[in-house]
Amino acid sequence: MIEDSKSFCESVEQFSQNNLLQKEDLHWLISIAVSPAKAELFFSMAFTAKYVQGLMRVIQQSTTNPEIKNLQQIKDDLTENMEKISTDLKRYIENEAEDMKHAFEQKYLGMSGEAFMNLRKLLNDLEWVKIYDNHLKRIR
Image (cartoon, rainbow, N blue to C red):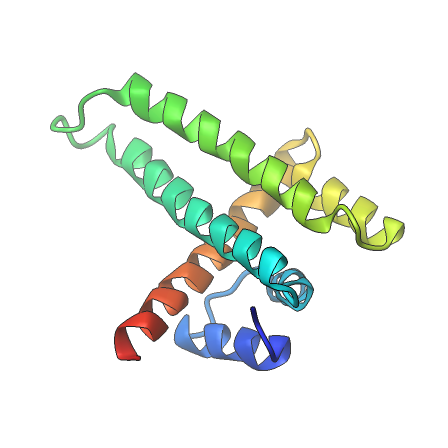
């Protein structure tokens, strides 16, 4: 559970050295994580986002690195986890105000190139959340 969403978001922003790309929307997502169940789903999405970002990096490197094998399996895994993050995001915001939910779904989950690029940016930010969370676990 995140007790102070503004402080947490600012800490992630500082930790990322100002590399958050969708800070306002990330802050909105963080502000929803007020119950243990929502926080658990939020951090699960952050984990999946970090994993997806890693898969995307492997696929990008596959053109120049002949040591990368099983590219089709990696692509299948990416597809499966992109579906998971989309489903989890929908579940996460399902009880929010209709206008906010609709705007978020259009911006990140729509079937357009722009929505996909926005989702990639949001995944970047969620990856930073996971990296920051891992950092906090190490220093405690």
